[in-house]
Image (cartoon, rainbow, N blue to C red; front, side, top):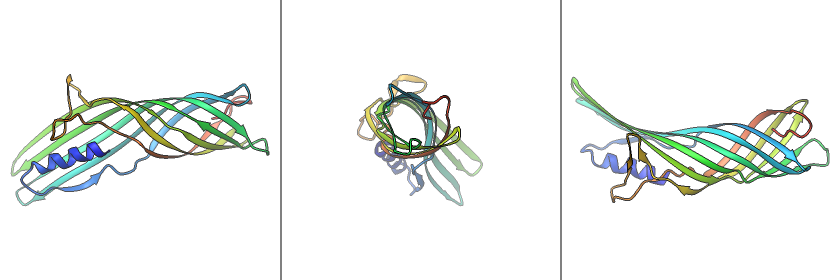
Length: 205
């Protein structure tokens, strides 16, 4: 999120009052729906859909009015599961190693709000971008009847980043104060905990 944090800093530096960064893109919860199967005894295949978001906010207020600059980022991703499944000696607990190549789409929303006395002004912009990433993940699964408890840890690594194109005009894109394109980078550690349901004998999650 380095580029986005720089935009937050650049935007607030142009305002003739000292704005406070109330929030600057903290760690976030994400939600995932996945389906995975084991074929040929140990080959893991499948796919997943993931949703997540984070945000930043800068603000200033005094007796004369207030200014806020909100930045909200929402992503949707589609991942393919391709890896290896291993069953421990108890023949129940499974460990999976998964590469997870990912196509990630980000919608970024900038909202500027200014209120002075009885007058107010609001400007909103939306930018869209597409990234390619890979997320190597190690998971452990243990069945409880037909239900499966799953925990995992992985690292989301951005491979290719697309420009943040303005929603109303794909030819226009977000630039920093030096005129360079701004990119969204979601790279970072991923920790997951979930519940699955077993269908058949070789269903994993």
